Amino acid sequence: MSRTAGRGPRRLIRWWRRRSLRARLTVIAATAIAVSVFVAFQVASELLAWQLRDTVEEQLRADARVLAANAERAGPAQVELPPYPGSGQLVRVILPDGSIRTPAGQPVLPPVSENAGRVARGTSADLLESNGGDEEGYAIYTLRAGDGAVQVARAVDDGPVNQFGFGMLLIGLLCVAGGALVGRTVARTGLAPIDRLTSAAVRVAHTRELDADIPDEGGGEIRRLIQSINDMLAALRDSRQAQRLLAEDAAHELKTPLTSLRLNVELLIRLDRRGTLDSALPAESRTRLLNDLGAQVAELSTLVAELTDLARGDVSDESTEVLDFADVVAAAATRAESRMPDIEVALDVTSVWVNGRPAALERAVLNLIDNAGKWSPADQPVQVRLRTEGESVVLEVDDGGPGIDAADIPRLFDRFYRADSARGLPGSGLGLSIVQRVVDAHAGRATVARSARGGALLRVVLPAAASPTPIARPTTGEDTATS
Image 1: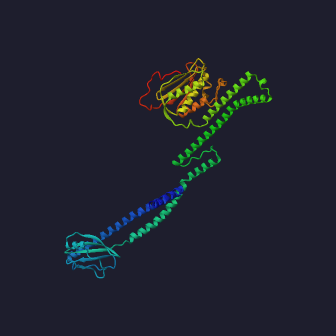
Image 2: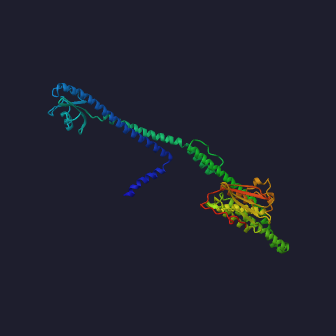
Image 3: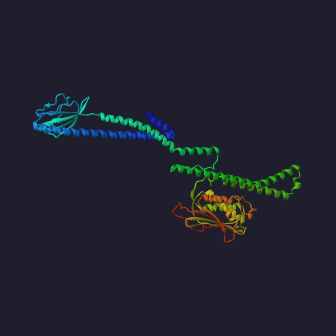
């Protein structure tokens, strides 16, 4: 039973959801007007009926006072009753013995009620009552007159109210039809910008053209919607441009190592087919060639890994968390020392907290240390310092190399950019670009300057976060370490 009863509302909801926005607005407008007309009809009908009742009562009271004044002068039994006019008002006199007098030819009124009898006996005040039969009802006003009472009655006529209701019904139907028409017109006019917006979006989806902005028209929510879509298209254009530039840069950077690798491999294959590999390439030359091949393969692997990381478009899919940046820096320094055994990394860190992605931050710190390790002499350690400055966390990576030329500083964090002095060193030119992207994703900034030792000083500033524990790690020898 309950399941069957619940199907109707669910079907109505499904039907409503399948309607277009125009149809919904039309139905809402017509329904609102219908409810308004119905409420107005009820209120107006009550006001009209009240006004009619009040008018009838005032007329009955006035006529009753005139008749009562005559009855008091002449007596209820001798007072002259006005002849019945054929319609409208009816009169009756209640004598002291309970009998009644009525004009000749007047329709019979309902019997005298008990309350009216008490008025005639003088035990009750004047009385207005309604007596209704099966066919016709009367409003009867009873007023004490001498030792009896007089009654003035009028038939209760609902005709004006019924006529008014019928007229209101016709007006309501016309208003509902007009409301539906107006609602559909308003919906069509109001949704015209949405239609044009939809057409523009469909055109963009079909043509894949992101260059043309959607015209900004309308106001309020429509304008904000159009602006949001234009912002989305601009972001898509920037993303497509970035992808195109990345593909072009990657193709350019991969061309040189791939060409060198292909030429060396073709040389080995050609000499091997001729059977002159041993004679044409002595052991020393062959070893040097194989070492070059290994270095080129390693360089390609590093470049492909960095390109893959850079092409993700975001730092990573890992979630952010409040973490101790000192642990991230220490982990990155350990990885850097394992990759560059000849380079010493000197840590001077203190426990600071940031809100970030640990793997991405570790990759950025590792790239900074790797970059510094390429320039630092063997007897000059890479100095890594971590501290707080106000509401920020500051990481500094200081190398003892020759420093960076002023002309190279503006482009140091660009993708694939390598200074002239770094052309002979291993690397892809993507490491510092990845650092910049990670720092930007964490609402920080990266800068470069000359260190006190004359080398490069790479500086990363990130927003500090509150410690997740109320007790901070004490500053001891464990917080400052040299590895």
